[in-house]
Amino acid sequence: MSVCEPTTYRLGEWDCTGVTDGEMPLPVRNFYHNADEAELRAALAIQGIAGESVPTPFNPLLLRRGDEVVLIDAGFGAWASTPTGRLAESLAAVGVAPDDVTVLLLTHGHADHAGGAVTESGALAFPNARVLLSRAEVEFWKSAEAEALAGRRAGPARRVAAALEDVSEDIRPGDEPVPGVQILAAPGHTPHSTAVRIVSEGLSLIYVADAVAQPLHLVRPDWNLEPDLNPEDAAHTRQMLIDAAVRDGSLMYCYHFALPGLGWVDRAETGYRWRPAC
Image (tube, rainbow, N blue to C red; front, side):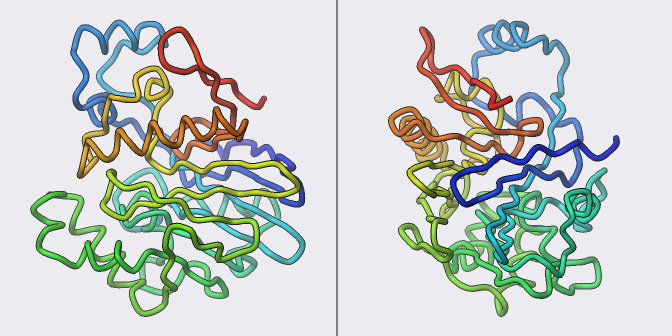
């Protein structure tokens, strides 16, 4: 798969560009774990999906404003035997080198979002960047509870957390670690997952991380991901972020949507409707 042709959007003072770490098929049930089978198949058929898997990209968001280069999430990187690890190539396509990144903001500890923060040798992949990651999220992945709840995903997340523990700065909901970049609480997928609101000149964009992972989550916000560690909280977070985007007219950026991954959410007869920005 070639590097997706990125599209840059102007949000006030920010240039916002979706970049990719790669793509691979994942089981449909990873995304709609609690869905009724007949309802799920009917909904997928409307989207032209008939098989047992769905193409799943891993697309961080790049923000640029003057000398500030902010990367939100970092893909899988070299932490897994997957067709990923292409983030540096994708960044190069828009004129950004790893050394140029000034802030790396990680929404949670799952390896498909945070693994790319560290190279295969254990060095920081973005050596000049402030690394921002919830301290509570790091502590969770170090705990015995994480393994009990997350199963096979706990090991990779624990390794990422250990690699970043001493070099990352804590972030909490309500923080604004970079002017115009606000941390939102988004618990459920992991206990301390965060989302991000980017604001400038009266405009806003909500980066939802894994709260909305597939388009059907807009139609059925009650359908949870298999990795959601607290499904009830995850469904509440999903609904909260969707409602905020509709209420405020905010753009939404979805990490696992095909690039450019950016659009608006409108109310529909059933659930909500995705309106791509291009």
